[in-house]
Image (tube, rainbow, N blue to C red):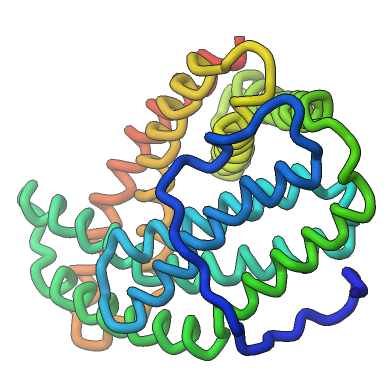
Length: 303
């Protein structure tokens, strides 16, 4: 099968069973690169399929979040295997994972924005009308996300993408050991994070985009360490814990920045402009605080 061809979406004839064990829990240093991919990708794909099925009838905020996380993990895993999957095939798959993550993320983004607006209201801001409007936007996002998830036939796409990747890897690296390969890909992800962290540390004025790049690089590294932990030396438990701590700070900043952008770009025909401005002023103030906290944490790891 041509890995560089179009990505057809056939109707699946088999179904995934969700494996609740952590991806990579059954790996060993004797596994091949190809077999390791199957062991890592299959439970993540199963999780995404299960979440997509559940969201066809429910609107659980955590469900949308976990679906987005599953697609992000798949992007990281396909990046790791890009040397054997091929540049074009990897770009096709990861591009679709990114798009589907955004589809799932639309509802999640309004959940976060709504919670922040409630916090603004609780702190004394007069934003009741905007809180109600955000709730309506969230309901619209649920319908939009469900419609796209159904029309995209997520299960069929993931089944086909997994099959294509497995076929390519079995023909190119089924007899190659996983350990050295995994260590090399983790080191490359580490270097990318170090480079982006140092950029933040060296600049007197923190740039939002630089923090965003650190967040993405840190997330990729954490996912890879979690995937490959059973087969790479050193355990990396402390590194994963540190990355999680940094991600929490960066995530808090990103929530504010993304919500500010979301509210600025949305249309609220029945909300007075002064209410919107008051909410944006509150968000801007909180964003400054969270940016400083995130910058300090990033500078700590850049040393």
